[in-house]
Length: 124
Image 1 (tube, rainbow, N blue to C red):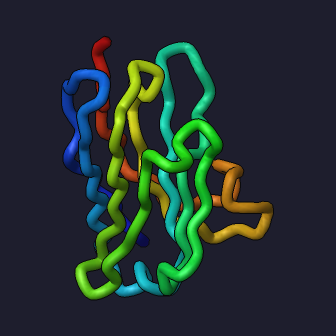
Image 2 (image 1 turned 180 degrees about the vertical axis):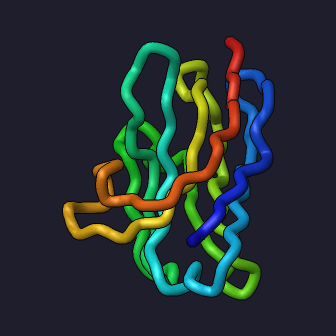
């Protein structure tokens, strides 16, 4: 069993930055890829970013590429999402998740464990 807790969300203005953190319990954190997803009101949960076990390869949604950076610290059992140049369309609840499946990193179905979600609101 893995528990994930996200922190770092909040209310910011367009152009500002935020860093989300996701702390994991359990020894298996460093054995699995991790991802970030987000969900805006009335919309489906969408892929944001993915990072492999050793942090050497990352993947991003086109909408955040060049603005967001995913990273991980396996010694601290934590994955991060640095969000720069935020836009109002980045507003939503952000979830971190631990990936166990093989469909592909952008599919929510590939992820077994999810955090509770953290609200990010960007005003114009």
